Image (cartoon, rainbow, N blue to C red; front, top):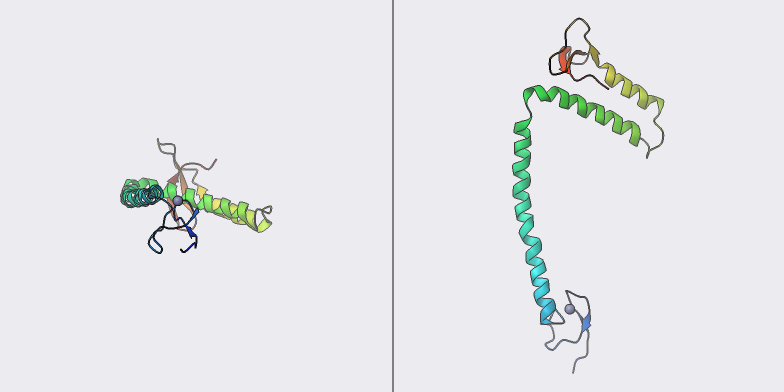
Length: 139
Ligand SMILES: [Zn+2]
């Protein structure tokens, strides 16, 4: 009689199989549990992929032409801030980092002889694109 121990693929307990090379689990319970676990993991993955692609499409459609300016500025400021605070594994910001941050803020110059809009945005001159844009004032 062969006394070689096999490891159950579900509970990882060692067992002596009744039928060698055929039995992968110590018991019928482990075999059915492993089967249920496999089907459980497979099912939501397919559903999730469908939901994600739908969501991202909606998001792109929802960004209005007016919102792009503010979103771009927000992303720019966030990027600069992230760089300042994560430079060299969270060491204090260097003088160069501070200057880069200040430069990015100076890109948009407040236009003083133009009125703001009812939505609270103010006219700024974008030094890089040489255009004026309406932005929420930096706080
Ligand atoms: Zn088992």
